[in-house]
Every structure is written in C-alpha cells, then in structure tokens.
Image (tube, rainbow, N blue to C red; front, side, top):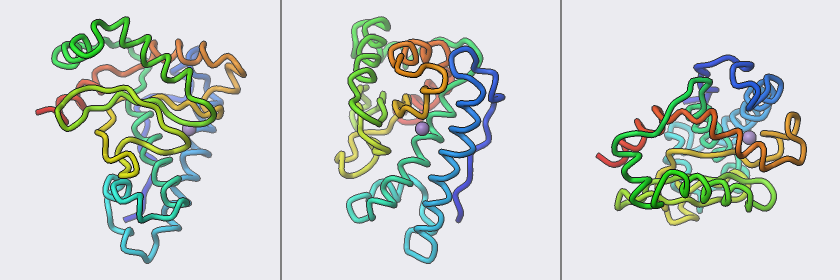
Length: 202
Ligand code: MN3
C-alpha cells in the first residue's frame, strides 16, 4: 500500500481570508506531499509497508525518527484538512455536551485550546483528543508528533488539531500567531469533528 494525498473537499482559495490560497497550495502540494513521499520511500520493502498509518504511529518507539516524523506528518495533515471547511458549522449534540462537561462551556474550551496553541514553542500541533474513558483533553506536541504515538502512551485519538508550524501561517500572518489561531475558529468543520467524536465514543 502506498500512501497518497487525501482529496480536499474545498478549493485552495475557499478558506480565505482565514487561510490564503498560496499557503493552502504549498502546504498541501509541497509539505504534505513530501511527508508522503518520504514515508513511502522509507517503508518500502519493510514490515511497515502494508500497515495502516495508525498502526505505524502506534509503534513509533521502534520506528526510526525519519519514519516517526513522516508518518506523523502524513497523519496530522490528513486530519487537519478534514476538520477545516469554508462552511460555517457549530458543535452540537454529544460533542457539545462533552465539551461543556469537561471545559465548563464552549468559550472556556476555546480559550484553553487557543492558549495551548499559542504556548507551543517552536513547531508542533495542538490537539483535542478523546481518551480511553471517552473523555476530552487538550494537549500539544512538538514537531510532527501526535497523541496516537506510543511515545505518548497512546493518550487518545485526536478529533481536532491545529498546525502550529510557521509554514501553516507565515505567508499570510508572518509573526501574528494569535491572529492565525483566532482565524482557525471560523473554519473548523464541527460536523466532521462531531462524526469523529461519535465514532470514538460509541
Ligand atoms: Mn503543516
């Protein structure tokens, strides 16, 4: 099995002004594609060749750091593209109830997630994940790491993520990291996050 770029359900320019067309194009066609190319090359002919991306991530301990970085790069970006949209959506149902239960209310969840993103020093990601007890958590990880990797003791399955690498925002926002984070709230695909939440909690 060879990994491939997932199809986007929107155009590069459709997320503007929150994410611009050039950033989308370079991020998807160049950055994400190169993680995929590197990963495919690295696992070719090895026992990882026919494994699902999640299985590769779950054994990060025994993978090379090259495979760790590129398998993470592929998984993280695939999730990211799937949870953003030009449509306006809102969290609802069980997902909203769980957010309110864990973080008091949506506003306070938003503040905590934004703060975790802002405090990411250097390149990395922030995550909303579902743990084994179906509870929500916000964490951040460096580089292309993610909470599925066994170096994080398989903390849970992420249902929402934000790319905090400079390549994700620098063309449009330069050093205005806070503006990029606040723009993110306008393009989250809550319908998709809700589907993932249901999938991992029922
Ligand atoms: Mn990226």
